[in-house]
Image 1: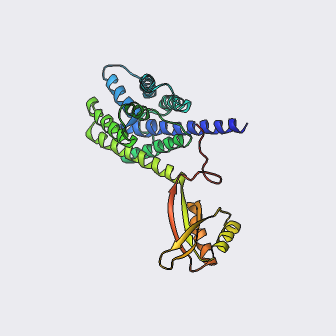
Image 2: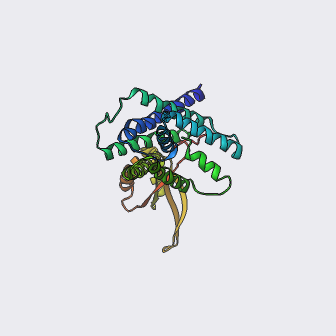
Image 3: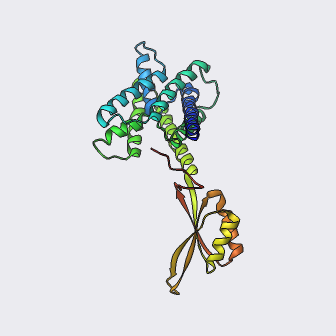
Length: 292
């Protein structure tokens, strides 16, 4: 039962994330004639080209078609081991874009300055992508391209993303978009990347506090009993005095760092402390490792 509820929660959050992503595009980016990267940006370029020859296709449908083609190509090249979550997110993005395109009023109904609409769209899209990533999903598009390219050459995901987005956004000039639209497209892509990084980092970052004190046993007991955080004692030796001792190590949430530092000072005002940021703390009390 617990496994079922966990799966329902994951797919619900991915659905919300993909609906936010699609709203960012349809509700914010398209009304101000913006553009962007990834499968959605490429779909916009293709739809604009087809519109010039009298063929009208919704952007959500084109997103689905392009992702389906990429999945088929990747299937023959790297195998058919795609996660169900990736296929689910691709379908929800496509349905979400078509849904918002049908229900939202035409034109710039938000009445925002163009740059503000682009930034808002980038933030919403970034939040949606981060929600998807946090649940182990993928938005397809560039992820699939990276998978195909890495089958033959090892290139970082970041480089593939930057290069593909640069080409996709630049190609919008070929279908009648202005240079300012291209510039806004790069701004939107930067906002999306920054938003995803901030959310993912904020979700995973914790603090590692190292406490050097002579009365390490008293310090460890006090932290466990009062702060209710686990403590690890590390063997240490002061090189100046050649005295062997223990270093108290505590891993905690970012928000708990100041409380621990103040508490340590009440136990030993002469304690020496260092604080470092750590990302991806897994285990009891922190983040669980997702099962494959």
